[in-house]
Image (cartoon, rainbow, N blue to C red; front, top):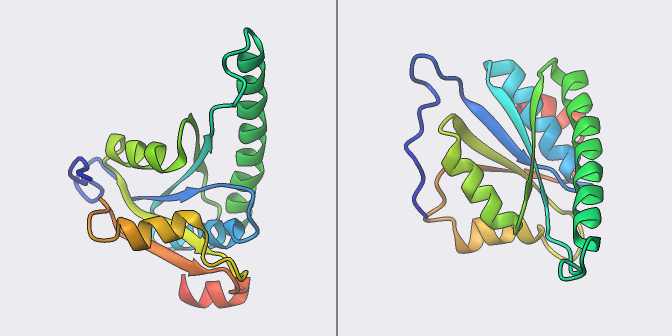
Length: 165
């Protein structure tokens, strides 16, 4: 996994913290941490939502409608999450929707944006483990991932995150 060189701290650039947004409970913990930290250090914030291609793409017209609905749902969710980030720290978040497999799109987005300096994820608190994205990045890709990854424990409160971020 090779990424473009990071330029986050060069003249004319600004470090950017990236959060992958989904509908899990712990996602708010990642957003809260990233927004608070970005606000404190003057970094930018990017929110990425990945829409997985629908299973009915082979049906004429149905795939397009499903894709449009999924993208509209993702954009609405990103708008709510961006509002939360703004409320938490005053940071305006870049909102990005991509279509494809989540891990592939995540790596592609990082490769395309040389200002991304940190990926912020939150670990699930359930018996199923930390979540598939955390497990794959920390487990399978840890040695070759192109940027540092911060994993926020999903059980931390706003007050606890404030003390850390």
